[in-house]
Length: 233
Image (cartoon, rainbow, N blue to C red; front, side, top):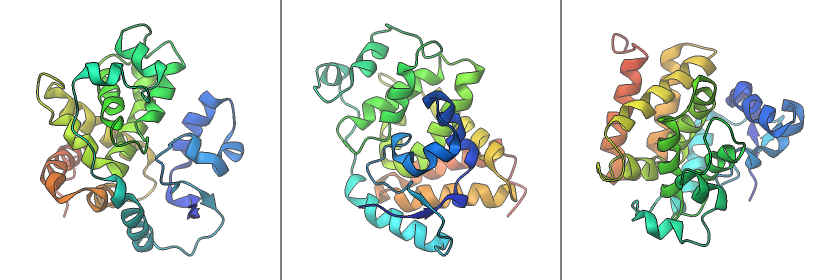
């Protein structure tokens, strides 16, 4: 299934970042954004159609995403390391065989955080957390895009990972992830900042299961605080 979505609903900058690493420009990559964010939902297909309202977009996103929202909890890492559907790039990064700052393989791992495989997605999101602790300023800019869209497309899995416990993910990564989301919202926003925040939050809430919505609200409260928006309604 392919859905045509108005390209103006998403920041051109977000596509440009990945186009740069793919060696293509925006006009080349726009029709094939599923290669950048392979969410398995195909909701990043662009078209010239501009009639679709935000309400319709959120409704379609929720309906199509719902079968994929029941993500697995983060499992023992040995499970993923021996899993045949976990990429070699991911296994190598987990084993410390390359740096997030010096290898194009890192982008393949980042892309895989949007896999439609509910069983392996938590591991890729965990690896993104690990990257956040090691990335330089340039890579953090790219990771900000990943963090925002993971929160908006796969919030249930993200919450499961961020709240997996200190034996898996340190508490600090909740704050770090919120910081990356707020950074991307601020950079990409071309209208009122509160409106951009509300759009991101609403998209995430729509895609989240009831069991994880309270945790997601905590995350977005941190985002709102970082954007200094608590003085606004």
